[in-house]
Length: 233
View (cartoon, rainbow, N blue to C red):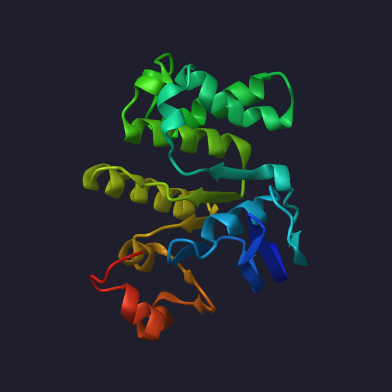
């Protein structure tokens, strides 16, 4: 059953439509990767799926019991992360606060479990801005897990990380999908990794959009142009 459905949805960025007439159903339990050129509307679409921006036409709806406030979101890394005066514990537990202004015992337990899952329990009292990039992403992923039981939206989760940490984080996300049954929607410039992990690929391009299985994507003109070592714009 679809958790999020876009019906002829169009989204604009700075007054210009960058996603137009998109039909998309994000099914429970799937791993969907969104790839494509810079400026093709990938991040704008994620903001639309989150309900942070409204479609200029068409509609976005939530189903199978999902509420907009129950989506775990990992945004793109920015320099702001390096000037964020909070402890790891404070960052992680902020993901629980969408369910109330105060931390309950259950929320604290959820935060502890997610920190253990991300292997960051031993740094819970450290300053977030002093962590390595990989540790920061694990903390932010733990925060996203505190906000959801069903759906993760990840916007370039490995951007700027070294190859070893990138592989580790990809495996963590795959584990959450396999063992926890989480639905994953991930934006990625790493087309080869997307092909290795995803159930479906959504390729967004100016005037051209592909949606289908990795196998069908590999055989498509877009897939042939963007995979197999081609430049991933």
